[in-house]
Image 1 (cartoon, rainbow, N blue to C red):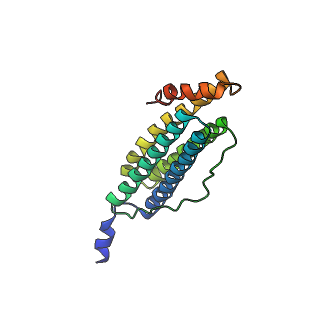
Image 2: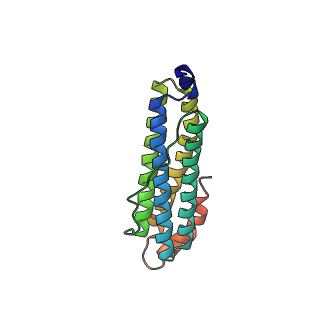
Image 3: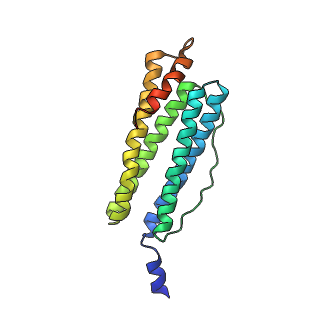
Length: 175
């Protein structure tokens, strides 16, 4: 019976644990972006609210992709508890600065996962993680492009609404 249990999962415990930790990171990102969406909506920034709602859904999809991968490999995916999500933000620019910081953090996490997979000789998971790393290039690119709008347009006067208007073009530029 013990040998059969060993065959149940082709994931090493260490890899399963770091993937479960990443599920929590993705869930946190999803909840953070949903809070940002609500804040932007409250500020009358309709396109930004829609942008963050889409980002929230995308992060949830990433979480589920990891969740399903763990379960499909015979591991046990853990549904994360998410706390400490801010509901208020200092500024319009600040939400995008925080977005870029979050995306850079996520990239670092996936790089760490890839490194651990290589060291553990888990090339199946290493290959799986490559999709997320490629996705992170797009995520960081879009966040940087949006921050450039703040530098070019500025937030003074009607600047916030001009930036909000231009978000639509920039947010699809990375796709």
